[in-house]
Structures are given as C-alpha cells and as structure tokens.
Image (tube, rainbow, N blue to C red; front, side, top):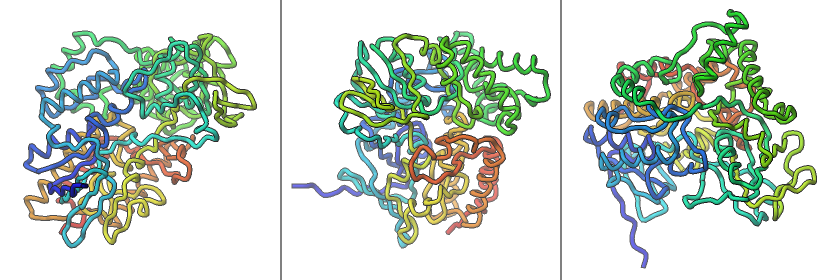
Length: 534
C-alpha cells in the first residue's frame, strides 16, 4: 500500500545542496529561519558531486574558492594544491556540511518536479518525485549555473555498443582507460582537463573538435607553506580586495591599454602572465574585452605558444582558435596542448566534416570509422537557465517560468523575476556569476537574500517581487553592456547557442562585481524601492 505524501512547512525551501544551498542553509539558521534543502543527488556537493571526470579541478585558486563566513573554518582547512582537484573540493564541502551539522535539514535523492505560488496564501507549494511535499513562504533556486548537462542528438548514438559517459555525469565507480580506444566529443574545459589524464594510459584517444578553445597553463602544484600562512593571516583584507575587483578575484590588473604600449612591453606582460598561469592572464590590459585590435594581440600571443608547444604544424593550426580570446570561457589546463604530441592522440576536425553518425563500434566522419571502446561526451551544459527551466515553476496566474523566459531570461539583478513573488535565485542569469569567482558571487547573493528576508520579517511584509518596468530596464541594461564588449564575437554557452532552439542572449552580467554589488546594496539601503512589497 502506497503511503501518503508527507507535507512539511518551512520559512524557506532551497533547491540544491552545492556551495550555494549549503551556505544559504547555514545563514538562514543563524538568522532564525526554518529551511529545508531538496537535493537530487545522494549527497552534498552540487557540481562537484557530479563532475568526477579524470583531471577535474577548479580554475579558481583554492584559497579563494572557499567560504569566508567562518574564520575558524578558514584557519583550520588546508588546501594541498594551488588549483584543487574535484576530490579535495568535495572533501571540503563534506567537512563544512558535517562541521555545521547541515545534513539533518537536507532531503537527498529527491527531485523537485513542480513549484507553484498560491496567491491567496502567499506560499509556495513544492512537489517532488518522492513522498514529500513542501509548503514555504519563500523559494530559493540554488541549482548552479553549470549543472544541467547537454546531451547532443547524434544519429546512431543509441547504437553504440561501448560505454558512454558525459563529463558532467561521470560514474562514481572507477572507469578504466588502460589500453582502451577512447573518443572524446568536445574541446571545452572538461575535455581540456581530462584528455591529458586519459591519454597517459589509453591505447588511443580520438579528439573530435568542432571549435578550438584558448587555454592558459595552470602551473599547478603544492601550495608553499609560507603562501598558506600569508593568506590565512590576511584573509579579511584579501576577501575585501577581491570584492573591489572586476571578477571578484584577488589578482593584479594592468590599467594600461594593449595598444598604448610597445610590442616589447606588451609581450613581456603576456609572458609574465603566461608564466604565472590561470585566468589572471585576461587582466593583462584594460581593453582586451572591448577592442578587437587589442584583443588580437593577446589571442596571437597564445596562438604563438600553441605553435611552440605542438610539434605538428597542422595540428597546431587546428588547435589555434581563430576567434577573439575571452568571448568563450578561458580554460585553465595542464599539458593539454603538449598531449597532442603523443602518438596515441589524434585530432579530428568536425567543423568542416561533421560527424556522419555513431556506429556500433565507433564514430564515422567523412565515411571513415574511428573504432572506440569508450565514448566521452564533453559537450557541456545548458548553462545559466537549464536547471531552473527543467522544473515546472509557476508564479502568478499559473504562468510558467518557461513561458516568461521564452525569449531569454528576464530578471532583476539575476536575483528575482517579476510575476514570481518570494522566488529567489543564487547566481541567476543577469548576475555576474560565471564571469567572477563563483564563491564571491554566491556569498554576496546569500547576504543580500538573508538581509532581505530579515527586513521583510521585521516590517511584517510577506511578499516581494520586482516591479516590471524596473526588470525591463535591468534586462536592457544587461544587453547594452554585453553589446559593448566582444562577447558576441563567437558562439558560446554564455549566449546559449550550444543548445538547439535556445534564445541567443548573453546571460551573465558583464559590468563587473563592484558595480553590480553597488546596485544590489542600493536596494537594501533604500528599503527595496525597486520591488513591490505587500
């Protein structure tokens, strides 16, 4: 006999138990709110629970990719590497979860199927695929920007007789590469990280590339003890300084134009940043994101490095992106380009000759069969909006968020969307999110949401949503800022063009973290004057 659904009531319902959901749960508890997290996975971690592919690691330096809400936590945890691996990040998340006893308020292995706002009650009603229903005054999507994997429709995919793994849903059991023939479709970040690792033991790796990507070396390694001690001793200043910089990273920016200095000085700056490694490379000059001629100097510098590393000039040319640098997400790699010097690694260009189909024993391109045992889909995500739009979310008048966002996301500050009262998003579309250190943006959003909920409680206000004209102005502002950069110069997941039928809209906010935070703070200081309160 099927048991009846259990219906629980909370102040706040949270979807997702990654970095965002866990931190929000902690902060809500501290402020006296009852909350429940619903998580589809069997345990905490969010993107770091799922992305277990070989070589998976963060592209933000470990000591900045961490929580700042507890100084004791900052001091007690020791990161082993400059760029932490997925297992180490997951260990950190589990440590935080246990240290603050967060698991007791999380429902695991539970998928939210529908969420409806009942206007007469000013409450959200949430249905799941388990025997659990939730009523809450507020609903927060902590579902992440890169958490809905994209599976391409390729003819014959279902006919393949070997194993198929998506990098964003990698098995939790060990995957053997020894002597295997591996086909990798895609050359984004997960492919760039995993191909060098797989190729060390594989019989052969066939890389099917449609578009080459820029990658900057990580120069990863153990964190020197003196570096750890320095950061731990100066964490408050480092965190504050990060908030004052464009991308929410504590790093150095050059205030010069790439075109106003000599070629010698320009190349010295690029060389210095190449040797330092990582995402700070793009901070070499102020105009790389705006001036195509300036950008080309950086792009050509990286291409020259690729030509130096890759011995085969034909491969080097195919691996050299011909787009502007930075319009796609810059990748951070370890030996990616050098891997193509290995005899057991082949590069197949599928831009000029697309894949014909997947066969039982491999991949056919231009009539040629590449036999493989294992197919790796490094095909990315339905970014920014995918995880939210997978859920049937309905606001006023039962209007669905799918209908509201049919022409692209419409939000105010990437935090809320008109017509959906008491509905919040952490690092949602039209917020800085993926253009920044995600932890900086996550914590700023959580602070804002918690301050807002405390304000509403103190003022005995039970409903908040953005004013439509304010939201329209914000959407226009976001689009205008993006159009003034080089971000539209290539096809990227920032624009959603990797997903068939998805509207072509640049989704992250490009105005930088400080300007964005100032706009958010203004709302708090003015009593949320851009919102309808009742």
